[in-house]
Length: 195
Image (cartoon, rainbow, N blue to C red; front, side, top):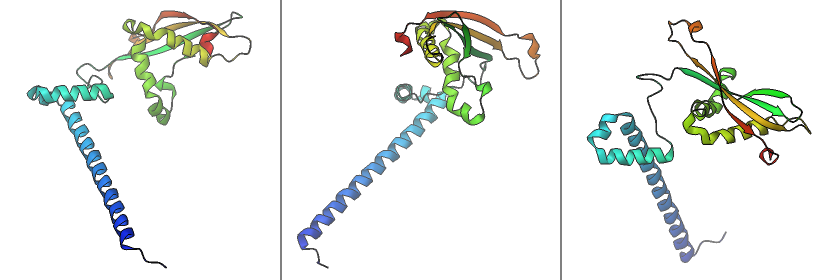
């Protein structure tokens, strides 16, 4: 087995030093990012800190809202969201048949699937509101594509209905709050929409 020359030993030492230096800076960078992120979340969830330090509060707000990590307590207090909402799509086919299809509801899923599909609940909660009208055509086209299941009988229109129900408090009577249904839009479907 041949021994390394002095030049080879210097080269190996140099590569090891470079590798260790890169690892050090990578670890330091990840550690600083995690610490910053935890600090930002702490400042965001404790509003008194952001009011005491407004510059830091502005940095945190900018960081968390642009990355999508912002959090809110509106789910818990002072007035928790008390409306159960789901969207039903009535798909009209070219032969005149109508098929009903619902966007994913957490109520119908097991716990693991609920965890994976939670974004649909949040999406439906707000997407059916008037200020989000720009989402309605996309929602209708998506429902048409998902339900384009009959050969030679494509969807031609999608009616979208909101079903709303106010959830009573734990000691309240559930029968006093019936479901209310509103049609909020109709989306005509073309062959191009089904691609």
